[in-house]
Image (tube, rainbow, N blue to C red; front, side, top):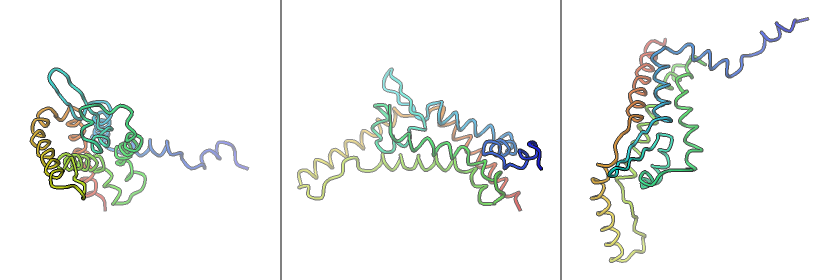
Length: 195
């Protein structure tokens, strides 16, 4: 008959124990980079909007709401439903470098690239959303309506240069970008070392 101590030793490790073990196997530079990405995405402003003496910041976890409606960057993102889906995605990307330490598969080493990939995808989507047509003409629009919509789009695009002067990348954006590049380089370096 097994003693109670032997039963506990035979039980599979919990998810928390496996996470701690995986975190212990990650090098110090990667740990520091993961913490910096967390700070950059959740605690410090990624984008900063300055209008006169007013300054408004947008954190990275609100980026999905900004991509959905770029005008919200100027009006605030309080209570955004987009956070419900985007915050867990951000957390998965931050923790993705732990994957190769759970299972020794070469492909999982690409988890180190996840934070940088998410930032690049969000930046590309935001650029695409802000450079396209803001007002789409309906298919049944007449000539006058079409010209009016074209004029409005031209006005928005000419004003885009003015708007771009008021939006800057904040400390959080730079911190997370540098840290995610460090993580990606660590992942590539580890991928080369794997058999």
